[in-house]
Length: 189
Length: 237
Image 1 (cartoon, each protein chain N blue to C red):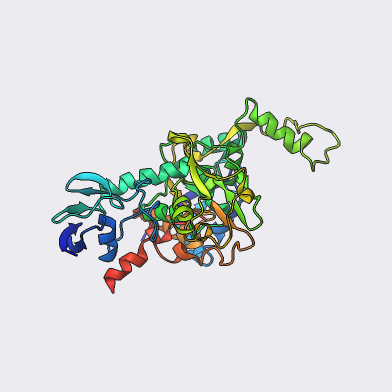
Image 2 (image 1 turned 90 degrees about the vertical axis):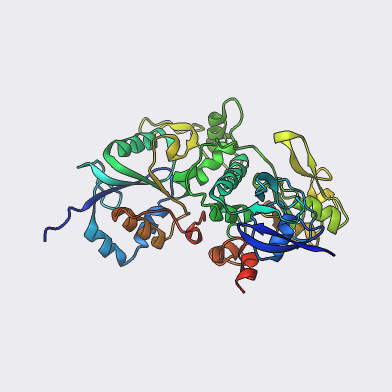
């Protein structure tokens, strides 16, 4: 019997806390079952920084808060057949999107950075400058959900989703049997 | 009192004069989703999540009187889609960040989203309004980012507590719940008020200080069961 070729999975953490990647490891010993079906390409888990092949599944944690996030997300869309947003940050911006609600002035980003680095009451910043190194990716005007930047195929809700939900979703997707989530398993926290 | 029969989703139930469709459904163990309606408070018909088709017409089940021979559609894919749109719009109108909210797991808005399969991003834009937090009261805080203007606190304060701590201000999309004073500390609100109790605010707007996370996330009411299970449970017994 010839073995089926393994599905290739790539993952990335954008404007997230890495909690969803930790939750991916909460699959525990079922990871061994999963690894029989998949191999990891570009991912913080493998420390591979660029795509070596086209991938079947891309898993995105976090939304887009800076230009690097947008580049990575577009790269994933170009190189993955199916793109899955995992966690509330990828779905709706999550906690980083809290800054959207306080930025309603004419120059909101400048005000936000000035308060964070210069004028804030508890700031000890001896340079009195907003960090401006060319290596720092530029912040976007707002935090965007992944679906506002590229077309996303699936979303796994949760903060973070449990290992059970991630495992069940991935294994049913790989088997071509994914039909949405049971209501009892949907969580936003 | 005269009783009569009507059908909800093909199930014949008994109702009596003066009952709304929702009263009759509740008594028969059929759950109709609702947010602004709450047991013990007068009906408002504001959120429209309880919209049903009664003889083909869309009505809010919490205010529409039950009538003999009425045919009511409740859990149809079409109606649930409309309800999901309403709940999504409530999420988009305020700043609802479940991961950091103390009410997560006890929140009826969140639980309604679970029940209505709200799992993917939507076509609606996020309004991301700039709303204040009022922590002036020694025992109570108000995080109005989470308010859905259901008015349950208004009715509880006026009708049950006899106080009128809360009320609506503004019109149209600018209508908001406000307190009767410069801030909550300058009203006669008290932690023992029914309006302040956990069951009245469906979301995490009214916060009782020093009581947070008494029950951990994951073990809360809607972590254990879908919203409506108590009413649906009556029918299974």
